Each structure stands twice: as C-alpha cells, then as structure tokens.
Length: 280
Ligand SMILES: C[S@@+](CC[C@H](N)C(=O)[O-])C[C@H]1O[C@@H](n2cnc3c(N)ncnc32)[C@H](O)[C@@H]1O
Image (tube, rainbow, N blue to C red; front, side, top):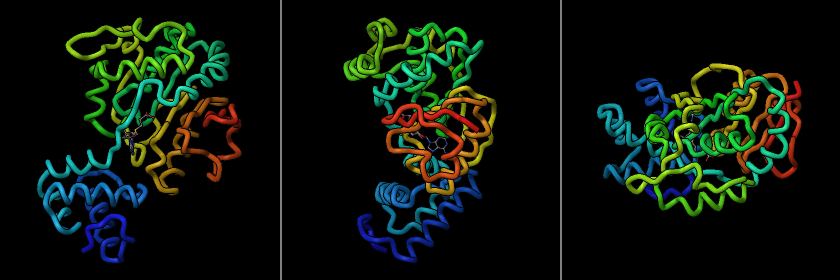
C-alpha cells in the first residue's frame, strides 16, 4: 500500500477506506461515509502513522477492537478550528442586515450547527447583548464531538488568544471593549456568566440526526466544506425544515447554496457574505 497521501488513490485503498467507514457506521453509529474523500484519507493516514500501522485494513481491525483507537480516529476526523468573531465581516453584516429584522420578534431561537468549542455562539451572544436582544434569545449550539462540547461548557478560552479575538471583535463592529465580557482566571479568559446562560450546548450529528426545533436563525459555518454533495443536500434539507418562514441562514465564506436544489428557496442578503433569507 502506498503511504503518500499526495498520490492518487488506487482501487484497493478506496475499497479499504469505504469498508473502514462502513465499519465505523455499523459498529459505532458514526457516519463519515459522505465526507470529502481527500480529507478523510489524509486523516486516516495520519492515524495509521500515529498507530504504526501499514494498511487501512490494519487500522480497521484496531478501531473495531479498541474503543480508544476509535476515539482517536473520530477526533482526527473532526476539525475544530474556530475563533471568536471568526470572519469579522460576517458578523458585521449580520448586525447590519439581520438584527433589524430580529428586533421585531417576540422571542428568537438560534441554532449554531457545528459549533466546535463554542466561540461562535459566545460571539453571537455578545452581539445580541449589544443590540438589546439577548434577553429574548435562546441559542442552541451543537456539535457531533462530545470533547469540544465539554470545552465549550467551560465558558472560557486560553488567554493568549485574547489579542486576536479583541481585534476580531472590533472589526466585527463591537460597540464596547471585549474585556467587558471577560474575566481572567488561572491563565484562561472566562466569559461573563450572563452570556452562557442564554446558550444550550448539546450533541447533534448532522449526518444522522433529525431536526429538533424551529429556528429563526441557523448558522452552520465551516462545517459543510468537509461534506460531499450527498451529505450537503441532507443538511440543507434539515436546515430548510428547521428554519421558520423568512428565517435566516448563515454559511462559511467557502460554502454556498448556489448549485444546490435549495437555491430558489433563499434570497441572498449581502453580496459578499453567505447570509441568506428563506423565501419559500
Ligand atoms: C472547523 S469547525 C467550525 C466551527 C465554527 N462553526 C466556526 O466556523 O468557527 C467544524 C466543526 O464541525 C463539526 N462537525 C463535523 N461534522 C459534523 C457533523 N456531522 N455533525 C455535527 N458537527 C460536525 C466538527 O466537530 C467541528 O467542531
């Protein structure tokens, strides 16, 4: 078996990877069968090297018989990079174009799907607080990965990120100073408790789980880039079902609803941001 992930995939390796993903699904109920193959392949090879294995079939045996190896592989598949006010222009646009509509709602439900360690949900809580909307908002933040949700529930982040997060906050149109929302304890920056009180973190897997509520806003940013077209369609169906009439959908900069079967169901809110409004 070749061990260089730049080489084109051969038929045998393709079969082994498909069997491994099927085994994960049937034995552990986690479904990576419709993730982008090149990413999955890179992560599998990373795990093979770390476990000193020569073949994907060898990895399959270990994963099926040793839950700890399964855990390590599924953590490899989950790419958790995030930031507070990541892509500040998106949050600036959200404040400018979505917030004025939300002001008329008696209550607001927001779903962050694929929230990682929670920074995106805390950013939303800060933004809504500054717009006087947080008290009537409930934020649901979900991810398939239990480990990142545990981190999210700590309501804090490493202090060395403070400077870049403060810069993002400012570029995102923040009205105060980020420090007003933070207290420093033991090398960590802790969010003020009133922010976390409006957020519920829960496990939800976009590949297998169903809709669990109706939302006025759904953000799913930098998650679907890892999904193939089949899984993207499933997730767009789920979001369309879960959005209230005239609800808002926000995607990552490298994601889009163009070329999906849902293009006609949304109107673009901002030309340079992936911010849409449901029209049917
Ligand atoms: C790169 S992070 C994006 C975090 C945040 N939305 C942002 O833009 O900063 C992608 C997250 O999607 C989650 N994810 C991947 N596949 C998922 C699935 N099938 N269901 C739910 N979450 C998933 C990963 O665990 C990871 O935390």
